[in-house]
Amino acid sequence: MLDSWERGRLARQRAAWRVLLFALARSRRAGQGCDSDAGSCNLVV
Image 1 (spheres, helix red, strand yellow):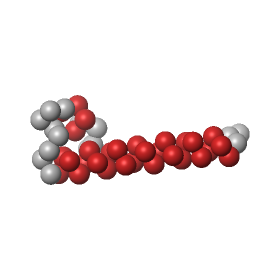
Image 2 (tube, rainbow, N blue to C red; image 1 turned 90 degrees about the horizontal axis):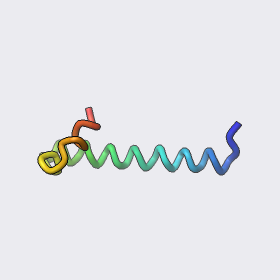
Image 3 (tube, rainbow, N blue to C red; image 1 turned 180 degrees about the vertical axis):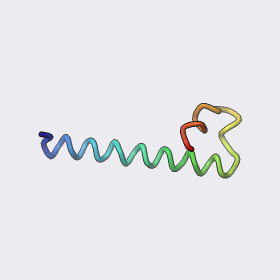
């Protein structure tokens, strides 16, 4: 069973991934950032 510190760390990690994926999706919709790093764009479906 996870203690409260571990749960908090995992929650922050998930939040960080959500922010990262949101930024990638937004840059893809704007047509920016994909030509320089196509691999990042493929993360967002």
